Image (cartoon, rainbow, N blue to C red; front, side, top):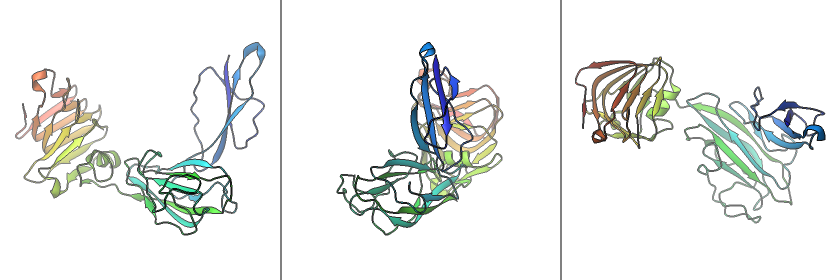
Length: 323
């Protein structure tokens, strides 16, 4: 009992596949921007196998690829398409950019939608076009004039396209260039939880040993983090201005979760704890140096701890915990 599955480059099912008792499997070593067919069938024991069920899919495009519709460089796209594709950078700190160099999409009927993120639930780079004659939503691109370049500002760095065609006329489709823009900086310039210019983004995209600094406009301003910032590398997070930069934990906290092996220096910051129990401002399992840090415990009356330490903790300068 169980299943067999197979991955092929053609639609025809194979004669046999890989046996498994699990209802899920991980496929690795796939090539970007490539069409594949996943075939699955049930092992019914003495009754043999069920028929193959085939699911076509295409792997994501990435930096440096040429982006075509389903017809490729020379064929039209198909009727009745409802095709979603994500375009993602392969390295943190980069944003996907899509420049369509040619476009031919049936005017007023078919439409290409471009979303700022890794799913169709993310914000739309909307055109001025209304609802199509086929009833597809407003904001899609069609016709024969290529739109402006799309550049992701989403924390994932991805763009997602959604193409819809009706059952009538088809056109040649589109061609475009995918590039990836390096937006990683060691200077925090906004108070957002994530995305380019944020503290979380800077810690995720910069290499170990980087000194993370703050733009002067953030002095005395507040960064609210919606979930703990996990740190696995060595960083100095330093405010160089007279007024402290305030970092506040949303919900339970903590603000920072310093994992084993990481060495982190924090200097001249004001940390506002979450409402949780243990380590609602900082959870440290690495080496943590606090210099001129004010930790404000917003839930001290609840017991528990503001700083949870299972690693090495070094205190310097005027550092304290206040309620």
